[in-house]
Length: 529
Image (tube, rainbow, N blue to C red; front, side, top):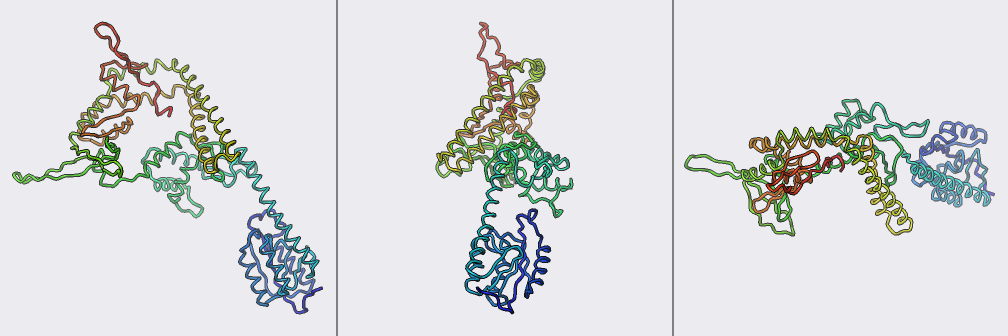
């Protein structure tokens, strides 16, 4: 049997894991007190004390490795610790200790809670103790992962609650923070207008006293992360996979989608110079589908010693695959053509008044139509649930990869949430379409005024953007592909029909045969999209 030399020195080593501080029996001060009392009782010579707060489940503890280095240098011959699991919970560090014992560089280990002698039997028991420590860590990790998976399946998001929510540790769930949540909802609403940047939203939160733990404004990347977090509309991500949550959402899926569209639009930056031209970024080339840009041309008239500025629009010709031969067009000619398109979707004051009255009269009649739409949405919902089940089966059968599974699942879950909120909105407010429809007609009645104003060209741009016009320029002619409701209104103007609340009523020809009927979709598309 090997025994330590009488003059052997010991290193006292105390460790507490940072991963599981709550469940550990002894704190570091308590370990040191117990170990020093044990050393005095056993007559051990403590050369140095090493204290570490780091997990031992993986190699790489700096202080532990420093202690072993000093042992190899001969500064001590033994280690005093509370238990073998304080020294190692992984095979690499356990092997280092055992190897030092085999080479007699390390001659003894002392534990108040574990018997050890530097004999073959003692080394065997020490190896078992190290193995049990590693097994404990592995099983704890697996049990923790299993618990997290079960929690996620129930719709509970593990981890720290995002800004605007609080962790209710008593009931073990995430609840709305009554102080912060109104501001979080407001930054979504503000950003959806397209008039706010991430920096402005950070300042907005700071003015309400919502800052980082260090009392600083949130960085713009953090604001961007908050605006992209599906947690706020009722979903959450866990290991890159999307799940339905049981927490209370702060915003609707519709508002979240609007914010994502604004973010996407703002990611495309345009030169500041383009702000001089009202119609850039609005029209595409009809030949190569690239955007139409503009530039200044100056012409000097020597006879009157005067220089005049002309603005011309033309294709950017950025396509590598489609050669473009489209000519330029002056801003005056372009504006005239755009005015014609705007006038074609205008409403007269009398038609506008009559139509608004019909909107009010038809509230009750729309309820049955809404119920039909809700039933169609519910069918779509069942179809998506069926797709999710088939997708999961395909993933479990290794038919699709995990990456493909995660991407498709996130897409289906997003569609499902959108449909659920559409159903909820329709069932609670079946006539909610009235305001968007009224706004549609109010916009149309302003068209003539906007078309006749050749001073404020940017107002024309905003009107065309509001109508969702798909403008293309080819052979110096602007074509306008309007959304359904605007196209119906333009068709009505072209054939001379009268606008009605249920659609567009055609006039009677001389032989009393009705002209072709063109209907305006009664529900505003922005409400149902």
